[in-house]
Amino acid sequence: MAMLAGDGRQVLILPEGYQRFVGRDAQRMNIMAARVVAETVRTTLGPMGMDKMLVDEMGDVVVTNDGVTILEEMDIEHPAAKMVVEVAKTQEDEVGDGTTTAVVLAGELLHKAEDLLQQDIHPTVIARGFRMAVEKAEEILEEIAEEIDPDDEETLKKIAKTAMTGKGVEKARDHLAELVVRAVKQVAEEEDDKIVIDTDHIKLEKKEGGGLEDTELVQGMVIDKERVHPGMPRRVENAKIALLNCPIEVKETETDAEIRITDPEQLQAFVEEEEKMLKEMVDKIAETGANVVFCQKGIDDLAQHYLAKKGILAVRRVKKSDMQKLARATGGRIVTNIDDLSEDDLGEAEVVEERKVAGDKMIFVEGCKDPKSVTILIRGGTEHVVDEAERAIEDAIGVVAAALEDGKVVAGGGAPEIEVARRLRDYADKVEGREQLAVEAFADALEIIPRTLAENSGLDPIDVLVQLRAKHEEGDVTAGVDVYDGEIKDMLEEGVVEPLRVKTQALASATEAAEMILRIDDVIAARELSKEEEEEEEESGGSSSTEF
Image 1: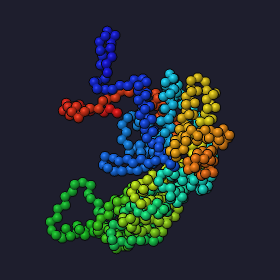
Image 2: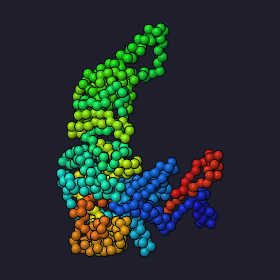
Image 3: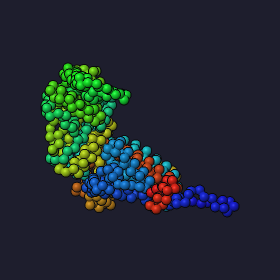
Image 4: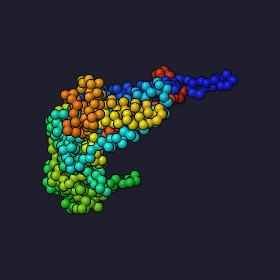
């Protein structure tokens, strides 16, 4: 990039090969990139949304309806498009569901902003108007939200089913919703009169085989391992479980030591001493009353033999995260030194058993007393079905947890978006200055959600919007579109319920991303080098740069 100095000389600022987009060109390019991303996932929204098949360079296939999975699997290069992918990731981390909604909203906000830019309204004014609108929208959502009782399991199941609808698990969603609600309630804890749920404490274990209906909730843990020695019991009842974060092996010396042995007796004594140490370790474990051992590190072959002789079921190289879940499930404590292991450190379970699931051996730790960590074992006909079921269950867990923590829900089916849009238009009349146009544009953008639900269901979006607006004008706040028969119905009565947090988070992150993209008026990008140029760069010791 070059500029002319005052005396007519050319001044080089950027090296050759850089691309630069300024002002309206930069805005148009960024908005276009973000909208393309939104359009990609828009067809997946709602119960009738279509799925995407993504094939990576290795030929691995992912078939999914989940917005964030689609965007993460796509190899997106454009920086503005990447900012929209961040919206989906934030939504996934914060709530677990509503990723497609958030991305579609961001794309539509930018589409409406583009119309305003063409009317010569400054991007800063648009951004300010959007900010005013989102604050008001969050207020409106709080007003129209309904409170739910943590013991209202029926509503919680409806929330779980709403999150799973359209994700390929319809035939088993009643069964899965019940498992999800039971699992979330099991790991919920009360802190300062507030319900706190860490969804990481619900372990999802997948195994192909059977059908979705065979998915089960284990009141304890399922570990994808097998016992270390065939002589060990396959099933242990009234299990007393030792959780060890240390190897059951003879410890190697810290320093490089050389042991010189001059006669066979010394060697024999050395071997016997090792055996004695291993036997003492196993005796120490057995003395505490433990009949099951989960070890995060290795277990020596000889130690395995001694453990088997004592009738102890042992599992080695258990993942750290699984060890922590086992501790929460069984009430045991993870011990880092066998000498410190006592009866008080042991966890308890009614049964620990090695079972064969779809040809693979797995360890089931069941019948734990009030476990604070549980496992959902997901079954399904094929690998792709099981993977998609896992994504649907993750979303359902997220929304049920959000509903329990916040205690507030809204109707689904486009009802909250239409209501917020209606009230925002009234609010826009009170806004002075050009920001009024941005608030109105924000209200129009919200209607993309019911419009898309209608489009994806083969309904006429204009007819649906007109009917929805009429119902909401009459004061029917929870009126939404029933995509199955095209009727406008009370979504709460139909059981289409979502946590308030899904909507507020989607609005907040979509608006922030749209604002950030709008404020960019200059894009300076390195051009992608050709293969020959890269080779020349490497020979000359330079580094290559990439364009988006």
